[in-house]
Length: 245
Image (tube, rainbow, N blue to C red; front, side, top):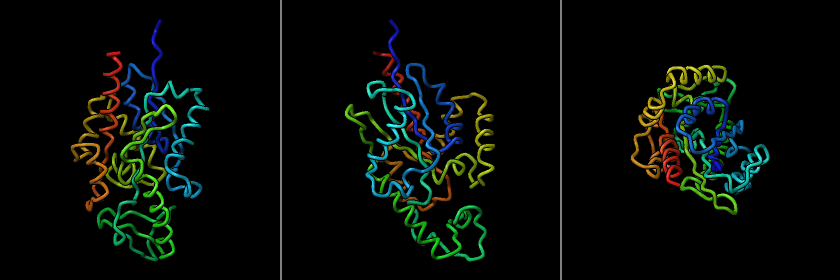
């Protein structure tokens, strides 16, 4: 009788994250991969401001199980990939320019000057509130937690400031994001080693723990970074463990 494959759940914010993470499928033979796209940032959502981070994770996983009919016993681990946005930036990085062009959002990144540009003090105050709330929620998660009665491992990973900053080294307009993600995948040409190499080069840190510690202290935040390589390594490790069972 064929042994049932356990599930690795990958939670991402949007469709472009799902597209860029697609090569992970080539690393997996002994598990199922289920990608949950949550279409937004749950940790900056005002509706979640009074919830513990672990509760938010539980609500996402409740949705996953409703969609898939997975039981806790089916799940090997849960991995989530987030954008750091500006949650770790010093307050003096935020400046108001009333005539600034910020597009559809209330702010814009100026990577050349290492600044976040806003059009009013009100917008700046509001953005601080949103990103401070997000920071407060994710800090308890970065060391890893367990989810549910079955103590399923949950681990959080990041792209700074967002996905397009990492794969394009610039901040893109919304209409450019999907095309850029597709270009990234096409340029890989199904080469999973190139995928791993790309994210290895985006991580100047020696360990997962260091990657979270350093990104919180980073002053050269205009240079893109990611710790997705540790996500990749964790999946490879679980695959190796599964072959021994």
